[in-house]
Each structure stands twice: as structure tokens, then as C-alpha cells.
Length: 134
Ligand SMILES: [Zn+2]
Image (cartoon, rainbow, N blue to C red):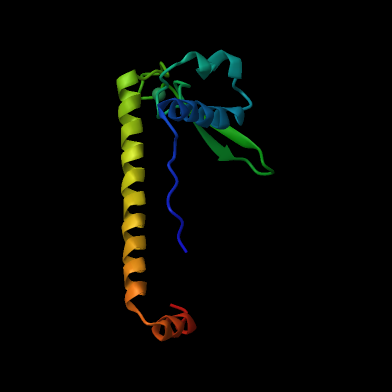
């Protein structure tokens, strides 16, 4: 049975941290990048597209787990600054939560329909459905 979609972030602060974590995962794989030079912890409201890095890293597999990276510099969303505004981050967060609410709402409505349908059936009918694998 399908599970109810989980809320992706508890709050706005967790959302901001997740953008930074995304950036770290992306860039840690880049052997040519000095991580401390681009520490996104210094950026309170990171650009969502580049995660605060100011650049997009495209990793190309080179065989045996090695990667060659190409830098698209600068990130076009923030002009290479790695920064967004509080307002832009809040809007992004609002959209992410709205999408989740819609999915969770769909799940809840379907669950309610299933409950109502099952209540209308007799025990024998429920048994028959189980045997049919429905
Ligand atoms: Zn950016």
C-alpha cells in the first residue's frame, strides 16, 4: 500500500540547511575545488539552483568511480554570488510545502474513499475481494 507522503522539511530553517547540504554533496565530489573557499555556511539565504556555491558543477563519469567535473560559471540564477534573498527562499519553501500538502491531501481523500467503500461491503464481499487480490 502506498504511504502518506512525508512533509519534506519541518520548517524554513531546515529547508535552508537542506540547500546547503545539497551543495556540499555536489561539490565534495569535485577534486579540484577547495571546499573552504566556497563555504556556503557563510551564506544565510543560499541560491537554490547552485546551493550557495555560485557555480554549477556537472560531473562526468570517467570510469572506475572517477569523475571529471565541468564548472558552469557563474550560476545564472544568482550571477555567481551564491546568494538569494530571504523572500526568494521563503517563496521556494512555500511552493515545496504547497506541493507536499496537495499530495498528502490526495492521499487522505483516497484513504477516506477506501474506508467508506469497505464499510458498505459485507464480510463475504470483503473476503471475495481479498481472494481476488484486489
Ligand atoms: Zn546560484
